[in-house]
Length: 311
Image (cartoon, rainbow, N blue to C red; front, side, top):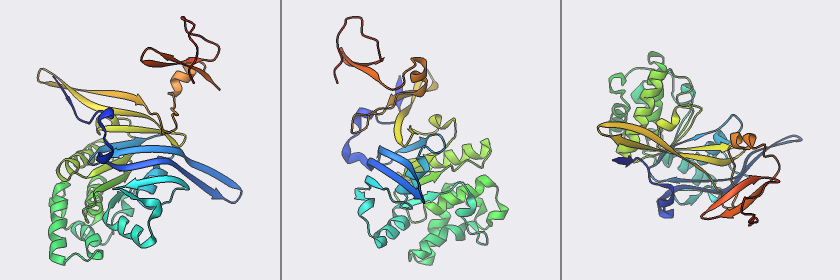
């Protein structure tokens, strides 16, 4: 018996999408230097999905997260969140988007919390700024802190909390105004394994109980076992995605993963680097159409049946 924890890739419907990025570019210019962080990136995230984005330093993953958070603007392309194109928003609309439609958790807890306020007061701050009545703000802050397992630390200031506890309060702060989207940039980067496990358990609970769409950028090597889907970015474009599923053998549950190479809107795909090195593929390949499949062969080779390439 097998239970899938995510929708299969082919079952993803357009009306289920919450995030849709199309041919996204981001170019940073400094004096005479241009750095291309995103190179025609495509990404789709379903409403209510719990997923992660991984990649080497400089791959563009944090740039993408900042664009989704409304903290940065792409140089070209389109980026829709909740059906709204972020590139067409006015300054006032973008402020409202950042305040109500998206929550953000930084790796450094000092960027998330006000040091002289207690945990419950920190969670109240975004609501006070948004005009929520004090009593309602306090009730919601307490409820959120209980959901992130911090109900016993309501009146503790950040200096009195461990790193993991601070990060859980930070998650509650990010959700204070009930945003449908939660973004987290390396949320467990400064935590030990026990603290990291608890933070991911909290993310899972919030995703399940609140239906919040959660996107995490991380270097965590075990992330594939913690979320429903992992998308890898390489050289500014999405390259591979991994779906998590659970198989039950009797009463024992076993986690398995399905891995796919992504094809963008222009028909481009990035072959895994280890495959390229194993076959010594460099500048070009032969692409052949087979029976229900496409074959990619190193330059200079032909199929045994002699059939030609279909471009």
